[in-house]
Amino acid sequence: MLSVVLFWGLVALGQSRPTKDGDIKDVEFRMPNVQPQKPDTYLCVPMKMEEIAKYVVGFVPHANMSTAHHMLLYGCEEPGQTDKVWNCGEMSMKEKSSYTMAPVCQKGSAIIYAWAMDAPQLTLPKDVGFKVGGNSEIQWLVLQVHYKDVSNFVPPKSGSDHSGITMKVTETEQPKRAGVYLLGTDGRLDPHETVYMEAACKITEDFVMHPFAFRTHAHTHGQVNAGYRVREGQWTEVGRQTPKKPQMFYNTTDPDLTVREGDYLAARCTMTNDEDRTVYVGPTQNDEMCNFYIMYYVTGDKILRNNYCFSSGPPRWYWSNIGALNYQAAPKSASMLPGSDKLLVETMSHYDKYADPEYRELDSMDDQLLVDELLGRNGDFEDEDEEDEDEEGYGDEEEQDYDREYKTLLKLYEELNSL
Image (cartoon, rainbow, N blue to C red; front, top):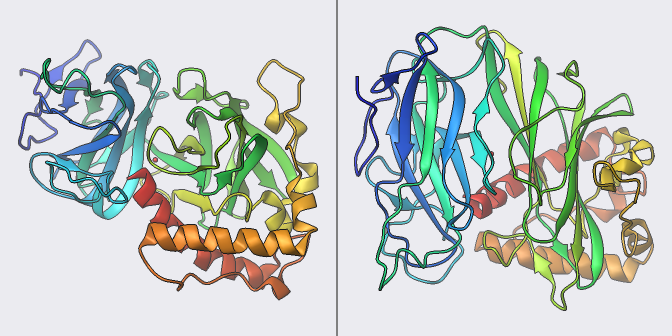
Protein backbone atom coordinates (compact mmCIF):
# COMPACT_ATOMS: atom_id res chain seq x y z
CA MET A 1 0.00 0.00 0.00
CA LEU A 2 1.10 3.58 -0.52
CA SER A 3 2.28 5.71 2.36
CA VAL A 4 -0.26 8.28 3.48
CA VAL A 5 0.45 11.87 4.41
CA LEU A 6 -2.22 13.58 6.50
CA PHE A 7 -3.58 16.61 4.61
CA TRP A 8 -6.53 18.45 6.11
CA GLY A 9 -8.40 15.45 7.34
CA LEU A 10 -8.22 12.17 9.19
CA VAL A 11 -6.59 8.92 8.22
CA ALA A 12 -6.48 5.66 10.11
CA LEU A 13 -3.17 4.47 11.44
CA GLY A 14 -3.41 1.28 9.38
CA GLN A 15 -2.84 3.19 6.11
CA SER A 16 0.86 2.67 5.64
CA ARG A 17 3.55 1.02 3.57
CA PRO A 18 5.63 -2.09 4.36
CA THR A 19 9.33 -1.68 5.13
CA LYS A 20 12.21 -4.11 4.87
CA ASP A 21 11.69 -5.09 8.53
CA GLY A 22 8.95 -7.67 8.03
CA ASP A 23 5.61 -6.42 9.31
CA ILE A 24 6.89 -3.00 10.37
CA LYS A 25 5.23 -0.29 8.27
CA ASP A 26 5.89 3.40 7.76
CA VAL A 27 3.09 5.76 8.73
CA GLU A 28 3.46 9.41 7.77
CA PHE A 29 2.06 12.06 10.12
CA ARG A 30 2.70 15.61 8.96
CA MET A 31 1.36 19.12 9.04
CA PRO A 32 -1.02 19.66 6.08
CA ASN A 33 0.82 22.49 4.29
CA VAL A 34 0.11 25.03 7.02
CA GLN A 35 1.05 28.71 6.94
CA PRO A 36 1.69 29.99 10.48
CA GLN A 37 1.85 33.79 10.47
CA LYS A 38 3.47 34.58 13.82
CA PRO A 39 6.58 33.31 15.61
CA ASP A 40 5.87 31.03 18.57
CA THR A 41 2.71 29.68 16.95
CA TYR A 42 1.78 26.20 18.18
CA LEU A 43 -0.26 24.11 15.71
CA CYS A 44 -1.81 20.69 16.25
CA VAL A 45 -3.26 18.08 13.90
CA PRO A 46 -5.00 14.79 14.89
CA MET A 47 -4.93 11.17 13.71
CA LYS A 48 -7.60 8.63 14.73
CA MET A 49 -6.46 5.20 15.87
CA GLU A 50 -8.07 1.91 14.81
CA GLU A 51 -9.97 -0.72 16.79
CA ILE A 52 -7.04 -3.08 16.34
CA ALA A 53 -4.11 -2.19 18.60
CA LYS A 54 -0.79 -1.34 17.00
CA TYR A 55 2.68 -0.63 18.36
CA VAL A 56 4.94 2.28 17.44
CA VAL A 57 8.56 1.11 17.55
CA GLY A 58 10.44 3.99 15.90
CA PHE A 59 10.28 7.64 14.85
CA VAL A 60 11.87 9.47 11.91
CA PRO A 61 11.53 13.28 12.21
CA HIS A 62 11.03 15.60 9.24
CA ALA A 63 11.71 19.14 10.43
CA ASN A 64 14.38 21.81 10.50
CA MET A 65 15.43 23.62 13.67
CA SER A 66 15.60 26.93 11.79
CA THR A 67 11.82 26.71 11.36
CA ALA A 68 10.52 24.41 14.11
CA HIS A 69 11.46 25.04 17.72
CA HIS A 70 10.15 21.60 18.65
CA MET A 71 7.69 18.84 17.75
CA LEU A 72 5.74 16.78 20.26
CA LEU A 73 3.68 13.67 19.58
CA TYR A 74 0.87 13.19 22.09
CA GLY A 75 -1.42 10.26 22.77
CA CYS A 76 -4.96 11.34 23.70
CA GLU A 77 -8.14 9.65 24.79
CA GLU A 78 -9.93 12.59 23.15
CA PRO A 79 -8.11 15.27 21.10
CA GLY A 80 -8.61 19.01 21.35
CA GLN A 81 -10.35 18.85 17.97
CA THR A 82 -11.17 16.03 15.59
CA ASP A 83 -10.58 17.69 12.23
CA LYS A 84 -8.13 19.89 10.40
CA VAL A 85 -5.61 22.01 12.33
CA TRP A 86 -5.95 24.13 15.44
CA ASN A 87 -3.93 26.54 17.53
CA CYS A 88 -2.87 24.57 20.62
CA GLY A 89 -0.37 26.89 22.26
CA GLU A 90 -1.58 30.48 22.40
CA MET A 91 -3.99 30.18 25.32
CA SER A 92 -1.98 32.72 27.29
CA MET A 93 -1.37 35.08 24.36
CA LYS A 94 -3.63 38.06 23.57
CA GLU A 95 -2.99 38.18 19.82
CA LYS A 96 -5.75 36.80 17.61
CA SER A 97 -5.05 33.69 15.55
CA SER A 98 -6.49 32.58 12.21
CA TYR A 99 -6.77 29.08 13.66
CA THR A 100 -9.36 27.98 16.19
CA MET A 101 -7.94 27.52 19.68
CA ALA A 102 -8.15 24.32 21.71
CA PRO A 103 -5.95 22.24 24.01
CA VAL A 104 -3.83 19.40 22.66
CA CYS A 105 -6.05 16.80 24.35
CA GLN A 106 -9.56 17.18 25.74
CA LYS A 107 -9.16 14.02 27.81
CA GLY A 108 -6.19 11.85 28.65
CA SER A 109 -2.75 13.14 27.68
CA ALA A 110 0.54 11.28 27.30
CA ILE A 111 3.72 12.33 25.52
CA ILE A 112 5.01 9.66 23.14
CA TYR A 113 7.84 11.40 21.31
CA ALA A 114 9.65 14.74 21.35
CA TRP A 115 12.06 16.38 18.91
CA ALA A 116 14.13 19.57 18.82
CA MET A 117 17.42 20.98 17.48
CA ASP A 118 17.71 18.60 14.52
CA ALA A 119 17.69 15.47 16.66
CA PRO A 120 18.06 12.24 14.60
CA GLN A 121 15.62 9.34 14.30
CA LEU A 122 14.84 7.06 17.23
CA THR A 123 14.48 3.28 17.25
CA LEU A 124 13.13 1.60 20.39
CA PRO A 125 14.84 -1.47 21.88
CA LYS A 126 13.79 -4.94 20.75
CA ASP A 127 10.35 -6.05 22.00
CA VAL A 128 9.44 -2.49 23.16
CA GLY A 129 6.63 -0.40 21.66
CA PHE A 130 4.09 2.33 22.35
CA LYS A 131 0.64 0.72 22.24
CA VAL A 132 -1.96 2.79 20.38
CA GLY A 133 -5.57 2.12 19.48
CA GLY A 134 -7.43 -1.06 20.42
CA ASN A 135 -8.16 -1.17 24.14
CA SER A 136 -5.35 1.26 25.01
CA GLU A 137 -5.80 4.69 26.53
CA ILE A 138 -4.49 6.23 23.31
CA GLN A 139 -7.37 6.53 20.84
CA TRP A 140 -5.91 9.52 19.00
CA LEU A 141 -2.46 10.81 18.17
CA VAL A 142 -1.88 14.56 18.02
CA LEU A 143 1.17 16.12 16.38
CA GLN A 144 2.18 19.52 17.74
CA VAL A 145 4.71 21.81 16.05
CA HIS A 146 6.02 24.97 17.72
CA TYR A 147 7.08 27.34 14.94
CA LYS A 148 10.17 29.37 15.71
CA ASP A 149 10.55 31.28 12.43
CA VAL A 150 7.63 31.95 10.09
CA SER A 151 9.44 34.08 7.50
CA ASN A 152 8.99 31.37 4.84
CA PHE A 153 5.21 31.36 5.29
CA VAL A 154 4.35 35.07 5.14
CA PRO A 155 4.47 37.36 2.07
CA PRO A 156 6.35 37.63 -0.16
CA LYS A 157 7.44 33.98 0.12
CA SER A 158 4.02 32.66 1.24
CA GLY A 159 5.26 29.10 1.45
CA SER A 160 3.75 26.26 3.48
CA ASP A 161 5.01 23.65 5.93
CA HIS A 162 4.58 19.92 6.24
CA SER A 163 6.92 19.13 9.13
CA GLY A 164 6.14 15.88 10.88
CA ILE A 165 7.14 12.34 11.70
CA THR A 166 7.36 8.95 10.01
CA MET A 167 6.28 6.37 12.60
CA LYS A 168 7.51 2.78 12.45
CA VAL A 169 4.41 0.71 13.28
CA THR A 170 3.68 -3.00 13.72
CA GLU A 171 0.57 -5.03 14.54
CA THR A 172 2.73 -7.62 16.34
CA GLU A 173 2.12 -7.35 20.07
CA GLN A 174 5.23 -6.17 21.91
CA PRO A 175 5.88 -7.81 25.30
CA LYS A 176 7.26 -4.57 26.75
CA ARG A 177 5.10 -1.45 26.68
CA ALA A 178 6.81 1.93 26.37
CA GLY A 179 5.99 5.18 28.13
CA VAL A 180 7.47 8.64 28.69
CA TYR A 181 7.73 10.20 32.16
CA LEU A 182 8.16 13.99 32.11
CA LEU A 183 9.60 16.12 34.91
CA GLY A 184 9.44 19.91 34.69
CA THR A 185 9.16 23.11 36.65
CA ASP A 186 7.57 26.51 36.72
CA GLY A 187 9.59 29.37 38.24
CA ARG A 188 11.84 32.26 37.32
CA LEU A 189 15.45 33.24 36.74
CA ASP A 190 16.50 36.53 38.31
CA PRO A 191 18.92 38.76 36.37
CA HIS A 192 22.60 37.74 36.37
CA GLU A 193 22.08 34.58 38.40
CA THR A 194 22.77 30.88 38.06
CA VAL A 195 19.67 29.06 39.25
CA TYR A 196 18.75 25.45 40.02
CA MET A 197 15.27 24.50 38.78
CA GLU A 198 14.27 21.24 40.47
CA ALA A 199 11.39 18.76 40.52
CA ALA A 200 10.80 15.41 42.19
CA CYS A 201 7.87 13.01 42.62
CA LYS A 202 7.28 9.70 44.32
CA ILE A 203 6.24 6.69 42.24
CA THR A 204 3.01 5.45 43.81
CA GLU A 205 1.93 2.79 41.30
CA ASP A 206 2.87 -0.89 41.49
CA PHE A 207 5.12 -1.13 38.42
CA VAL A 208 8.76 -1.84 37.72
CA MET A 209 9.96 0.78 35.24
CA HIS A 210 13.01 0.20 33.06
CA PRO A 211 14.36 3.58 31.87
CA PHE A 212 16.29 3.16 28.61
CA ALA A 213 16.50 6.71 27.19
CA PHE A 214 16.30 10.32 28.35
CA ARG A 215 15.92 13.72 26.72
CA THR A 216 16.57 17.24 27.94
CA HIS A 217 14.79 20.44 26.95
CA ALA A 218 15.48 24.06 27.81
CA HIS A 219 15.73 27.32 25.93
CA THR A 220 18.75 29.62 25.70
CA HIS A 221 19.58 29.77 29.43
CA GLY A 222 19.86 26.01 30.02
CA GLN A 223 23.36 24.71 30.78
CA VAL A 224 22.82 21.12 31.92
CA ASN A 225 19.78 18.95 32.78
CA ALA A 226 20.11 15.88 34.98
CA GLY A 227 17.70 13.19 36.18
CA TYR A 228 17.91 10.72 39.07
CA ARG A 229 16.24 7.81 40.78
CA VAL A 230 16.24 8.22 44.55
CA ARG A 231 15.75 5.01 46.53
CA GLU A 232 15.89 5.16 50.33
CA GLY A 233 17.89 8.38 50.12
CA GLN A 234 20.43 7.02 47.65
CA TRP A 235 20.80 8.89 44.34
CA THR A 236 21.45 7.10 41.04
CA GLU A 237 21.82 8.99 37.77
CA VAL A 238 19.29 8.32 35.02
CA GLY A 239 20.99 10.67 32.57
CA ARG A 240 22.68 14.03 32.20
CA GLN A 241 23.22 16.24 29.16
CA THR A 242 23.39 19.85 28.03
CA PRO A 243 20.26 21.05 26.22
CA LYS A 244 22.55 22.96 23.85
CA LYS A 245 23.24 19.69 22.02
CA PRO A 246 20.62 18.08 19.72
CA GLN A 247 17.65 17.44 21.99
CA MET A 248 17.34 13.77 21.11
CA PHE A 249 16.75 10.75 23.32
CA TYR A 250 20.10 9.55 24.67
CA ASN A 251 20.88 6.19 26.28
CA THR A 252 20.50 6.18 30.06
CA THR A 253 23.64 6.16 32.21
CA ASP A 254 22.89 2.67 33.58
CA PRO A 255 20.96 0.35 31.21
CA ASP A 256 20.10 -1.96 34.12
CA LEU A 257 18.52 0.75 36.28
CA THR A 258 14.97 0.08 37.51
CA VAL A 259 12.38 2.29 39.20
CA ARG A 260 9.70 0.78 41.43
CA GLU A 261 6.90 1.87 43.74
CA GLY A 262 8.23 4.01 46.58
CA ASP A 263 11.18 5.40 44.59
CA TYR A 264 11.44 9.07 43.69
CA LEU A 265 12.29 10.47 40.27
CA ALA A 266 14.08 13.82 40.44
CA ALA A 267 15.44 16.29 37.91
CA ARG A 268 17.45 19.51 37.92
CA CYS A 269 17.97 22.10 35.19
CA THR A 270 20.93 24.39 35.85
CA MET A 271 20.21 27.78 34.28
CA THR A 272 22.37 30.87 33.82
CA ASN A 273 20.68 34.21 33.18
CA ASP A 274 23.18 36.82 31.95
CA GLU A 275 20.43 39.26 31.00
CA ASP A 276 19.22 42.39 32.81
CA ARG A 277 15.65 41.05 32.93
CA THR A 278 13.85 38.39 34.94
CA VAL A 279 13.07 35.33 32.83
CA TYR A 280 9.99 33.23 33.58
CA VAL A 281 9.01 29.75 32.52
CA GLY A 282 6.65 30.10 29.56
CA PRO A 283 5.77 28.99 26.02
CA THR A 284 7.75 31.47 23.88
CA GLN A 285 11.39 31.66 22.82
CA ASN A 286 11.86 34.62 25.17
CA ASP A 287 10.71 32.50 28.10
CA GLU A 288 12.44 29.48 29.57
CA MET A 289 11.56 25.81 30.11
CA CYS A 290 12.99 23.06 32.29
CA ASN A 291 12.07 19.57 31.08
CA PHE A 292 13.59 16.14 31.62
CA TYR A 293 12.01 13.24 29.73
CA ILE A 294 12.50 9.60 30.74
CA MET A 295 11.55 6.97 28.17
CA TYR A 296 10.94 3.61 29.85
CA TYR A 297 9.24 0.27 29.42
CA VAL A 298 7.24 -2.00 31.68
CA THR A 299 6.68 -5.70 31.10
CA GLY A 300 3.10 -6.58 30.17
CA ASP A 301 0.13 -4.68 28.83
CA LYS A 302 -0.43 -2.12 31.62
CA ILE A 303 1.25 1.26 31.86
CA LEU A 304 1.56 4.02 34.45
CA ARG A 305 -1.48 6.29 34.73
CA ASN A 306 0.55 9.27 35.96
CA ASN A 307 3.48 10.16 33.73
CA TYR A 308 3.98 13.78 34.80
CA CYS A 309 5.88 15.44 37.65
CA PHE A 310 6.01 19.23 38.05
CA SER A 311 7.06 21.68 40.73
CA SER A 312 6.51 25.42 41.16
CA GLY A 313 10.27 25.87 40.77
CA PRO A 314 12.50 28.66 42.02
CA PRO A 315 12.36 30.60 44.21
CA ARG A 316 9.59 28.57 45.84
CA TRP A 317 10.38 24.88 45.34
CA TYR A 318 13.60 22.84 45.52
CA TRP A 319 14.61 19.25 46.28
CA SER A 320 14.97 20.34 49.89
CA ASN A 321 11.17 20.61 50.09
CA ILE A 322 10.94 16.81 50.34
CA GLY A 323 12.85 15.48 53.34
CA ALA A 324 12.73 11.87 52.11
CA LEU A 325 14.92 12.80 49.14
CA ASN A 326 17.98 13.26 51.37
CA TYR A 327 18.89 16.18 49.12
CA GLN A 328 22.28 16.62 50.83
CA ALA A 329 23.33 13.36 49.13
CA ALA A 330 22.45 14.61 45.63
CA PRO A 331 25.50 14.29 43.34
CA LYS A 332 27.38 17.53 42.67
CA SER A 333 27.65 16.37 39.07
CA ALA A 334 23.97 17.32 38.66
CA SER A 335 25.27 20.79 37.78
CA MET A 336 28.34 19.70 35.82
CA LEU A 337 28.46 19.38 32.06
CA PRO A 338 29.19 15.80 30.94
CA GLY A 339 32.93 15.40 30.61
CA SER A 340 33.65 18.41 32.83
CA ASP A 341 34.49 18.68 36.53
CA LYS A 342 33.47 22.36 36.71
CA LEU A 343 30.55 22.87 39.08
CA LEU A 344 27.97 25.49 38.08
CA VAL A 345 27.15 26.95 41.49
CA GLU A 346 24.00 28.89 42.30
CA THR A 347 24.77 32.61 42.43
CA MET A 348 22.87 32.84 45.69
CA SER A 349 22.02 29.57 47.38
CA HIS A 350 18.30 29.07 47.79
CA TYR A 351 19.02 27.84 51.29
CA ASP A 352 20.50 31.29 52.06
CA LYS A 353 17.42 32.92 50.54
CA TYR A 354 15.09 30.91 52.69
CA ALA A 355 16.99 32.00 55.78
CA ASP A 356 15.60 35.51 55.18
CA PRO A 357 11.86 35.48 56.06
CA GLU A 358 11.27 38.81 54.30
CA TYR A 359 12.77 37.51 51.05
CA ARG A 360 10.80 34.30 51.32
CA GLU A 361 7.49 36.08 51.91
CA LEU A 362 8.09 38.45 49.00
CA ASP A 363 8.96 35.61 46.62
CA SER A 364 5.90 33.64 47.66
CA MET A 365 3.71 36.66 46.86
CA ASP A 366 5.41 37.17 43.48
CA ASP A 367 5.05 33.49 42.66
CA GLN A 368 1.42 33.56 43.75
CA LEU A 369 0.60 36.48 41.46
CA LEU A 370 2.30 34.80 38.50
CA VAL A 371 0.34 31.57 38.95
CA ASP A 372 -2.93 33.47 39.38
CA GLU A 373 -2.29 35.48 36.23
CA LEU A 374 -1.43 32.44 34.11
CA LEU A 375 -4.42 30.49 35.39
CA GLY A 376 -6.73 33.45 34.80
CA ARG A 377 -8.08 33.49 38.32
CA ASN A 378 -7.89 35.73 41.33
CA GLY A 379 -6.25 34.52 44.48
CA ASP A 380 -7.71 31.01 44.92
CA PHE A 381 -4.37 29.19 44.74
CA GLU A 382 -3.72 27.68 48.12
CA ASP A 383 -0.39 28.75 49.53
CA GLU A 384 1.49 26.22 51.58
CA ASP A 385 1.12 26.60 55.32
CA GLU A 386 4.54 27.91 56.29
CA GLU A 387 4.04 26.73 59.86
CA ASP A 388 4.08 23.16 58.54
CA GLU A 389 7.34 23.65 56.66
CA ASP A 390 10.86 23.31 57.92
CA GLU A 391 14.30 23.30 56.37
CA GLU A 392 14.28 19.54 55.96
CA GLY A 393 11.09 19.57 53.86
CA TYR A 394 7.77 17.78 54.04
CA GLY A 395 6.63 14.94 56.25
CA ASP A 396 3.97 12.39 55.21
CA GLU A 397 1.03 14.75 55.83
CA GLU A 398 2.77 17.59 54.05
CA GLU A 399 3.38 15.34 51.04
CA GLN A 400 -0.41 15.04 50.68
CA ASP A 401 -0.63 18.85 50.56
CA TYR A 402 2.14 18.86 47.98
CA ASP A 403 0.25 16.29 45.88
CA ARG A 404 -2.81 18.56 45.78
CA GLU A 405 -0.67 21.53 44.79
CA TYR A 406 1.08 19.41 42.17
CA LYS A 407 -2.21 18.68 40.39
CA THR A 408 -2.91 22.39 40.11
CA LEU A 409 0.59 23.07 38.82
CA LEU A 410 0.22 20.23 36.31
CA LYS A 411 -2.77 21.99 34.75
CA LEU A 412 -0.74 25.19 34.57
CA TYR A 413 2.24 23.47 32.99
CA GLU A 414 0.08 21.63 30.45
CA GLU A 415 -1.24 25.05 29.38
CA LEU A 416 2.28 26.45 29.07
CA ASN A 417 3.59 23.33 27.28
CA SER A 418 0.32 22.89 25.28
CA LEU A 419 5.77 15.09 27.17
